[in-house]
Image 1 (cartoon, rainbow, N blue to C red):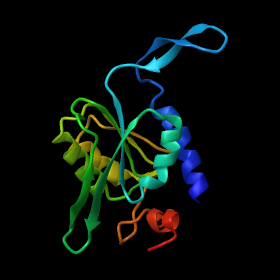
Image 2 (image 1 turned 180 degrees about the vertical axis):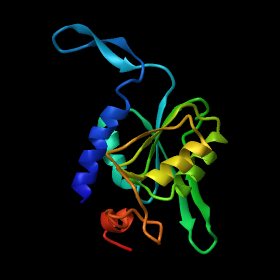
Image 3 (image 1 turned 135 degrees about the vertical axis):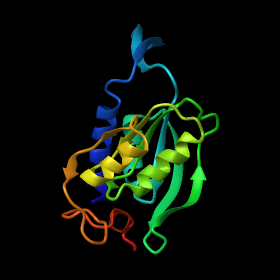
Length: 181
């Protein structure tokens, strides 16, 4: 499970950056100088939604080794019928930067919407969400919260079960990735 999540995330990392602006930079190789392609524009920041997003982080860093990294801890509290933020660590000077927000599952959309709203308070630029599976209703909620966010993933699931989990689905990604509950 860990290996597949890393590999899928690395491949999605390439895809999500396919249309970012590029330029060239002169570099010296052992043989001769060349103009190498590089990303231009605002800095790229990877932000993992804890804990499950960390399962994607290594693969995306492999695709984008120069990206800066941040973490946001937000979870959906069933009893409060709300989200709770418990951790936030972002790179300095994030205002205007492009963000790749990592979470392997978008079920109800509550956690993703809260994360996007929180990042907007820091004045981030373009937000792209990198996910594996998403529910139709979760994406609709995200679009209603911020229609400028683009979502990149592998599969759209039609429904959630009564507990708000994707059905079918992988179950608790964090528990499976960390081999803990």
